[in-house]
Image (cartoon, rainbow, N blue to C red; front, side, top):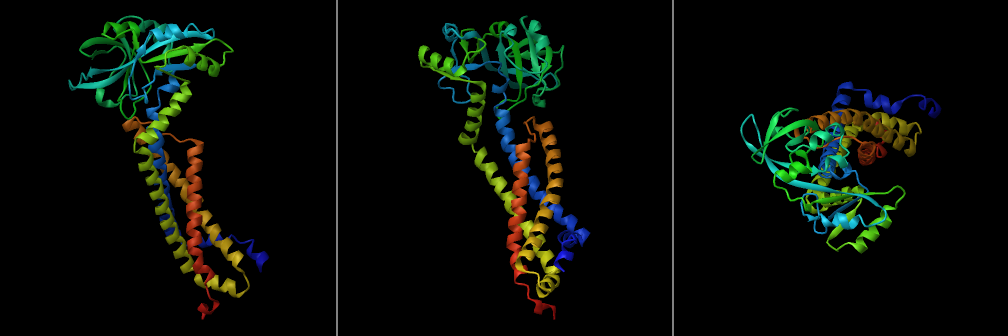
Length: 379
Protein backbone atom coordinates (compact mmCIF):
# COMPACT_ATOMS: atom_id res chain seq x y z
CA UNK A 1 0.00 0.00 0.00
CA UNK A 2 2.77 2.43 0.93
CA UNK A 3 4.68 1.65 -2.25
CA UNK A 4 1.50 2.29 -4.26
CA UNK A 5 0.89 5.59 -2.50
CA UNK A 6 4.32 6.84 -3.49
CA UNK A 7 3.26 6.62 -7.15
CA UNK A 8 0.28 8.88 -6.51
CA UNK A 9 0.92 12.66 -6.26
CA UNK A 10 -1.41 12.73 -3.28
CA UNK A 11 -0.41 16.16 -1.95
CA UNK A 12 -0.84 17.80 -5.36
CA UNK A 13 -4.19 16.15 -5.95
CA UNK A 14 -5.53 17.20 -2.57
CA UNK A 15 -4.54 20.82 -3.22
CA UNK A 16 -5.83 20.92 -6.81
CA UNK A 17 -9.04 18.98 -6.15
CA UNK A 18 -11.07 22.22 -6.07
CA UNK A 19 -9.72 24.45 -8.82
CA UNK A 20 -11.65 27.58 -7.84
CA UNK A 21 -10.44 27.44 -4.26
CA UNK A 22 -6.88 26.83 -5.47
CA UNK A 23 -6.94 29.98 -7.61
CA UNK A 24 -8.22 32.09 -4.71
CA UNK A 25 -5.63 30.51 -2.41
CA UNK A 26 -2.77 31.28 -4.76
CA UNK A 27 -3.98 34.87 -5.18
CA UNK A 28 -3.95 35.25 -1.39
CA UNK A 29 -0.39 33.95 -1.12
CA UNK A 30 0.69 36.05 -4.11
CA UNK A 31 -0.77 39.11 -2.38
CA UNK A 32 1.45 38.58 0.67
CA UNK A 33 4.45 37.95 -1.62
CA UNK A 34 3.77 41.23 -3.42
CA UNK A 35 3.58 43.06 -0.09
CA UNK A 36 7.01 41.72 0.88
CA UNK A 37 8.43 42.54 -2.56
CA UNK A 38 7.11 46.10 -2.34
CA UNK A 39 8.51 46.74 1.13
CA UNK A 40 11.91 45.32 0.17
CA UNK A 41 11.72 47.25 -3.10
CA UNK A 42 10.95 50.58 -1.45
CA UNK A 43 13.67 50.03 1.14
CA UNK A 44 16.35 49.16 -1.40
CA UNK A 45 14.98 51.68 -3.91
CA UNK A 46 15.43 54.56 -1.50
CA UNK A 47 18.92 53.34 -0.56
CA UNK A 48 19.96 52.74 -4.17
CA UNK A 49 18.60 56.11 -5.30
CA UNK A 50 20.16 58.00 -2.42
CA UNK A 51 23.54 56.38 -3.11
CA UNK A 52 23.31 56.71 -6.90
CA UNK A 53 26.15 59.24 -7.31
CA UNK A 54 29.20 57.55 -5.68
CA UNK A 55 29.21 54.54 -8.06
CA UNK A 56 29.35 56.98 -10.99
CA UNK A 57 32.57 58.64 -9.80
CA UNK A 58 35.55 57.57 -11.91
CA UNK A 59 38.11 57.78 -9.15
CA UNK A 60 40.17 55.55 -6.89
CA UNK A 61 39.73 57.81 -3.86
CA UNK A 62 37.40 60.66 -2.99
CA UNK A 63 38.26 63.62 -0.75
CA UNK A 64 35.39 65.16 1.25
CA UNK A 65 34.95 67.51 4.15
CA UNK A 66 35.21 65.74 7.48
CA UNK A 67 31.76 66.97 8.53
CA UNK A 68 30.03 65.81 5.38
CA UNK A 69 28.20 62.90 6.98
CA UNK A 70 25.89 62.31 4.00
CA UNK A 71 25.57 63.04 0.30
CA UNK A 72 22.59 65.18 1.31
CA UNK A 73 25.11 67.75 2.58
CA UNK A 74 27.27 69.98 0.36
CA UNK A 75 30.17 70.90 2.64
CA UNK A 76 33.18 72.21 0.72
CA UNK A 77 36.95 71.85 1.05
CA UNK A 78 39.66 74.16 -0.33
CA UNK A 79 40.79 73.31 -3.83
CA UNK A 80 44.30 73.59 -2.40
CA UNK A 81 43.79 70.08 -0.98
CA UNK A 82 44.01 68.70 -4.52
CA UNK A 83 47.42 70.28 -5.05
CA UNK A 84 48.55 68.88 -1.72
CA UNK A 85 47.30 65.43 -2.69
CA UNK A 86 49.22 65.61 -5.97
CA UNK A 87 52.42 65.67 -3.93
CA UNK A 88 51.96 61.96 -3.20
CA UNK A 89 54.11 59.83 -5.46
CA UNK A 90 51.24 57.51 -6.45
CA UNK A 91 48.62 60.18 -7.28
CA UNK A 92 48.19 60.64 -11.04
CA UNK A 93 45.25 63.08 -11.10
CA UNK A 94 43.27 65.20 -8.65
CA UNK A 95 40.00 66.46 -10.14
CA UNK A 96 37.75 69.14 -8.63
CA UNK A 97 34.08 68.25 -8.41
CA UNK A 98 31.37 70.79 -7.59
CA UNK A 99 27.82 70.25 -6.35
CA UNK A 100 25.10 72.80 -5.82
CA UNK A 101 21.47 73.75 -6.16
CA UNK A 102 19.85 76.18 -8.54
CA UNK A 103 16.40 76.86 -9.93
CA UNK A 104 15.07 75.74 -13.29
CA UNK A 105 12.16 77.53 -14.91
CA UNK A 106 9.60 75.10 -16.29
CA UNK A 107 8.87 76.57 -19.73
CA UNK A 108 5.44 74.89 -19.84
CA UNK A 109 3.89 76.21 -16.61
CA UNK A 110 6.41 79.01 -15.80
CA UNK A 111 7.12 77.58 -12.34
CA UNK A 112 10.55 77.62 -10.71
CA UNK A 113 11.80 74.28 -9.42
CA UNK A 114 14.95 73.49 -7.49
CA UNK A 115 17.39 71.22 -9.29
CA UNK A 116 20.85 69.89 -8.37
CA UNK A 117 23.92 70.85 -10.37
CA UNK A 118 27.11 68.88 -10.88
CA UNK A 119 30.16 70.63 -12.36
CA UNK A 120 33.63 69.41 -13.27
CA UNK A 121 36.42 69.86 -15.83
CA UNK A 122 34.94 68.14 -18.90
CA UNK A 123 38.34 66.96 -20.14
CA UNK A 124 38.80 64.94 -16.93
CA UNK A 125 35.72 62.80 -17.71
CA UNK A 126 35.00 62.19 -14.00
CA UNK A 127 31.61 60.46 -14.33
CA UNK A 128 30.82 56.99 -15.57
CA UNK A 129 27.45 57.96 -17.04
CA UNK A 130 26.31 56.28 -20.27
CA UNK A 131 26.18 58.74 -23.14
CA UNK A 132 28.22 61.53 -21.56
CA UNK A 133 31.41 61.01 -23.57
CA UNK A 134 30.30 62.75 -26.82
CA UNK A 135 29.56 65.99 -24.93
CA UNK A 136 32.99 66.57 -23.41
CA UNK A 137 33.99 69.24 -25.90
CA UNK A 138 30.58 70.93 -25.85
CA UNK A 139 30.68 71.24 -22.05
CA UNK A 140 33.90 73.25 -22.27
CA UNK A 141 31.88 76.17 -23.68
CA UNK A 142 30.25 78.48 -21.16
CA UNK A 143 26.50 78.14 -20.99
CA UNK A 144 26.30 74.57 -22.29
CA UNK A 145 24.75 71.97 -19.99
CA UNK A 146 23.45 68.42 -19.95
CA UNK A 147 20.03 67.54 -18.55
CA UNK A 148 19.30 64.39 -16.56
CA UNK A 149 16.59 62.71 -18.61
CA UNK A 150 15.59 60.58 -15.60
CA UNK A 151 14.66 63.69 -13.61
CA UNK A 152 11.11 63.91 -12.33
CA UNK A 153 8.54 65.33 -14.72
CA UNK A 154 8.00 68.53 -12.71
CA UNK A 155 10.64 70.24 -14.88
CA UNK A 156 8.62 69.76 -18.03
CA UNK A 157 9.82 68.32 -21.32
CA UNK A 158 13.48 69.18 -21.92
CA UNK A 159 15.23 67.91 -25.03
CA UNK A 160 18.63 68.55 -26.63
CA UNK A 161 18.72 71.96 -28.25
CA UNK A 162 16.35 73.52 -25.73
CA UNK A 163 17.17 76.66 -23.80
CA UNK A 164 16.68 76.45 -20.04
CA UNK A 165 16.78 79.20 -17.44
CA UNK A 166 18.98 78.19 -14.52
CA UNK A 167 19.12 80.67 -11.66
CA UNK A 168 17.77 83.33 -13.99
CA UNK A 169 20.53 82.74 -16.57
CA UNK A 170 19.85 81.17 -20.01
CA UNK A 171 21.72 77.95 -20.75
CA UNK A 172 21.79 75.68 -23.77
CA UNK A 173 20.97 71.98 -23.34
CA UNK A 174 23.41 70.20 -25.63
CA UNK A 175 22.33 66.70 -24.66
CA UNK A 176 20.78 64.43 -22.07
CA UNK A 177 22.12 61.66 -19.83
CA UNK A 178 20.51 59.39 -17.24
CA UNK A 179 21.31 59.58 -13.52
CA UNK A 180 17.99 59.73 -11.66
CA UNK A 181 16.66 61.47 -8.54
CA UNK A 182 16.83 60.49 -4.89
CA UNK A 183 14.85 61.23 -1.73
CA UNK A 184 16.00 64.87 -1.71
CA UNK A 185 16.84 65.78 -5.29
CA UNK A 186 14.42 65.67 -8.21
CA UNK A 187 17.03 65.73 -10.95
CA UNK A 188 20.40 66.97 -12.16
CA UNK A 189 21.99 69.50 -14.46
CA UNK A 190 25.58 68.72 -15.49
CA UNK A 191 27.96 71.48 -16.59
CA UNK A 192 31.60 72.23 -17.16
CA UNK A 193 33.58 74.13 -14.52
CA UNK A 194 33.74 77.16 -16.82
CA UNK A 195 29.95 77.43 -16.75
CA UNK A 196 29.94 76.85 -12.98
CA UNK A 197 32.33 79.76 -12.45
CA UNK A 198 30.46 82.00 -14.91
CA UNK A 199 27.25 81.35 -12.96
CA UNK A 200 28.90 82.60 -9.77
CA UNK A 201 30.36 79.41 -8.34
CA UNK A 202 33.54 79.63 -6.28
CA UNK A 203 36.27 77.71 -8.12
CA UNK A 204 38.33 77.34 -4.94
CA UNK A 205 35.57 75.69 -2.87
CA UNK A 206 35.07 72.13 -4.09
CA UNK A 207 32.62 69.56 -2.75
CA UNK A 208 34.69 66.52 -3.64
CA UNK A 209 38.17 65.85 -4.89
CA UNK A 210 38.46 62.85 -7.19
CA UNK A 211 41.83 61.15 -6.87
CA UNK A 212 43.13 58.82 -9.58
CA UNK A 213 46.16 56.72 -8.83
CA UNK A 214 49.02 55.55 -10.98
CA UNK A 215 48.84 51.97 -12.26
CA UNK A 216 49.79 49.45 -9.59
CA UNK A 217 49.31 51.84 -6.68
CA UNK A 218 47.68 50.51 -3.51
CA UNK A 219 44.62 52.64 -2.66
CA UNK A 220 44.80 51.69 1.02
CA UNK A 221 48.43 52.73 1.32
CA UNK A 222 47.82 56.00 -0.54
CA UNK A 223 44.79 56.71 1.61
CA UNK A 224 46.84 56.20 4.79
CA UNK A 225 49.59 58.51 3.54
CA UNK A 226 47.15 61.23 2.49
CA UNK A 227 45.39 61.11 5.85
CA UNK A 228 48.78 61.49 7.53
CA UNK A 229 50.07 64.27 5.30
CA UNK A 230 46.97 66.39 4.61
CA UNK A 231 45.13 68.62 7.14
CA UNK A 232 42.66 66.83 9.40
CA UNK A 233 39.57 68.44 7.83
CA UNK A 234 39.22 65.60 5.30
CA UNK A 235 37.52 62.27 4.84
CA UNK A 236 39.09 59.98 2.26
CA UNK A 237 37.08 57.07 0.88
CA UNK A 238 36.82 54.88 -2.16
CA UNK A 239 33.60 55.35 -4.18
CA UNK A 240 32.36 51.99 -2.90
CA UNK A 241 33.04 52.95 0.72
CA UNK A 242 31.18 56.20 0.09
CA UNK A 243 28.22 54.30 -1.37
CA UNK A 244 28.08 51.89 1.59
CA UNK A 245 28.30 54.76 4.06
CA UNK A 246 25.38 56.45 2.34
CA UNK A 247 23.26 53.31 2.54
CA UNK A 248 24.07 52.93 6.24
CA UNK A 249 23.21 56.58 6.86
CA UNK A 250 19.89 56.30 5.02
CA UNK A 251 19.04 53.12 6.90
CA UNK A 252 20.04 54.21 10.40
CA UNK A 253 19.57 57.98 10.46
CA UNK A 254 16.18 57.94 8.74
CA UNK A 255 13.09 55.85 9.59
CA UNK A 256 13.17 53.95 6.28
CA UNK A 257 14.81 50.84 7.73
CA UNK A 258 12.31 50.36 10.54
CA UNK A 259 9.27 51.41 8.47
CA UNK A 260 9.89 49.03 5.59
CA UNK A 261 11.21 46.31 7.90
CA UNK A 262 7.87 46.38 9.73
CA UNK A 263 6.15 46.22 6.33
CA UNK A 264 7.99 43.01 5.44
CA UNK A 265 7.02 41.49 8.80
CA UNK A 266 3.39 42.47 8.28
CA UNK A 267 3.40 40.93 4.81
CA UNK A 268 4.91 37.76 6.26
CA UNK A 269 2.27 37.57 9.01
CA UNK A 270 -0.51 38.12 6.48
CA UNK A 271 0.94 35.30 4.40
CA UNK A 272 1.11 32.95 7.38
CA UNK A 273 -2.54 33.65 8.21
CA UNK A 274 -3.68 33.17 4.62
CA UNK A 275 -1.67 30.00 4.13
CA UNK A 276 -2.84 28.62 7.48
CA UNK A 277 -6.48 29.20 6.54
CA UNK A 278 -5.92 27.52 3.18
CA UNK A 279 -4.26 24.44 4.66
CA UNK A 280 -6.70 24.25 7.56
CA UNK A 281 -9.67 24.30 5.19
CA UNK A 282 -8.02 21.66 3.00
CA UNK A 283 -7.39 19.49 6.03
CA UNK A 284 -10.96 19.86 7.27
CA UNK A 285 -12.31 18.96 3.83
CA UNK A 286 -10.15 15.83 3.71
CA UNK A 287 -10.26 14.90 7.38
CA UNK A 288 -12.02 11.56 6.66
CA UNK A 289 -9.25 10.69 4.22
CA UNK A 290 -6.58 11.50 6.80
CA UNK A 291 -8.41 9.39 9.36
CA UNK A 292 -8.64 6.53 6.85
CA UNK A 293 -4.90 6.69 6.19
CA UNK A 294 -4.22 6.50 9.91
CA UNK A 295 -6.63 3.55 10.20
CA UNK A 296 -4.91 1.52 7.48
CA UNK A 297 -1.46 2.03 8.95
CA UNK A 298 0.07 5.25 7.66
CA UNK A 299 2.07 6.75 10.50
CA UNK A 300 2.70 10.29 11.70
CA UNK A 301 5.83 10.82 9.52
CA UNK A 302 3.83 10.12 6.37
CA UNK A 303 1.05 12.52 7.38
CA UNK A 304 3.57 15.21 8.31
CA UNK A 305 5.29 14.85 4.93
CA UNK A 306 1.91 15.03 3.20
CA UNK A 307 0.98 18.34 4.83
CA UNK A 308 4.49 19.77 4.28
CA UNK A 309 4.33 18.86 0.59
CA UNK A 310 1.06 20.73 0.31
CA UNK A 311 2.63 23.75 2.02
CA UNK A 312 5.64 23.67 -0.32
CA UNK A 313 3.35 23.23 -3.31
CA UNK A 314 1.39 26.34 -2.29
CA UNK A 315 4.58 28.35 -1.71
CA UNK A 316 5.93 27.53 -5.17
CA UNK A 317 2.70 28.23 -7.03
CA UNK A 318 1.92 31.35 -4.98
CA UNK A 319 5.40 32.81 -5.40
CA UNK A 320 5.28 32.86 -9.21
CA UNK A 321 2.32 35.27 -9.61
CA UNK A 322 3.69 37.28 -6.66
CA UNK A 323 7.01 37.65 -8.46
CA UNK A 324 5.33 38.68 -11.71
CA UNK A 325 3.10 41.15 -9.88
CA UNK A 326 6.08 42.58 -8.03
CA UNK A 327 8.03 43.07 -11.26
CA UNK A 328 5.09 44.88 -12.85
CA UNK A 329 4.67 47.17 -9.85
CA UNK A 330 8.43 47.84 -9.71
CA UNK A 331 8.36 48.98 -13.34
CA UNK A 332 5.31 51.17 -12.79
CA UNK A 333 6.66 52.80 -9.61
CA UNK A 334 10.06 53.47 -11.18
CA UNK A 335 8.35 55.02 -14.20
CA UNK A 336 6.17 57.37 -12.16
CA UNK A 337 8.51 58.22 -9.25
CA UNK A 338 11.96 57.73 -10.85
CA UNK A 339 13.04 55.89 -7.70
CA UNK A 340 15.25 52.93 -8.57
CA UNK A 341 13.19 49.75 -8.23
CA UNK A 342 14.75 46.60 -9.61
CA UNK A 343 15.00 42.92 -8.83
CA UNK A 344 18.28 41.23 -8.02
CA UNK A 345 18.85 37.48 -7.57
CA UNK A 346 19.59 38.11 -3.88
CA UNK A 347 16.34 40.01 -3.32
CA UNK A 348 14.26 37.47 -5.23
CA UNK A 349 15.94 34.66 -3.29
CA UNK A 350 15.22 36.34 0.04
CA UNK A 351 11.50 36.74 -0.72
CA UNK A 352 11.33 33.17 -2.04
CA UNK A 353 12.84 31.83 1.19
CA UNK A 354 10.44 33.95 3.24
CA UNK A 355 7.54 32.59 1.17
CA UNK A 356 8.61 28.97 1.69
CA UNK A 357 9.14 29.53 5.41
CA UNK A 358 5.80 31.30 5.62
CA UNK A 359 3.92 28.38 4.09
CA UNK A 360 5.88 25.73 6.01
CA UNK A 361 5.24 27.56 9.30
CA UNK A 362 1.54 27.73 8.45
CA UNK A 363 1.64 24.01 7.63
CA UNK A 364 3.12 23.24 11.05
CA UNK A 365 0.31 25.17 12.71
CA UNK A 366 -2.35 23.39 10.66
CA UNK A 367 -0.78 19.95 11.05
CA UNK A 368 -2.09 19.49 14.59
CA UNK A 369 -5.57 18.77 13.25
CA UNK A 370 -4.21 16.00 11.02
CA UNK A 371 -2.26 14.37 13.83
CA UNK A 372 -5.36 14.39 16.01
CA UNK A 373 -7.54 12.83 13.30
CA UNK A 374 -9.38 9.85 14.80
CA UNK A 375 -10.36 6.89 12.58
CA UNK A 376 -13.51 6.72 14.68
CA UNK A 377 -14.61 9.97 13.01
CA UNK A 378 -15.37 7.92 9.92
CA UNK A 379 -18.36 6.33 11.62
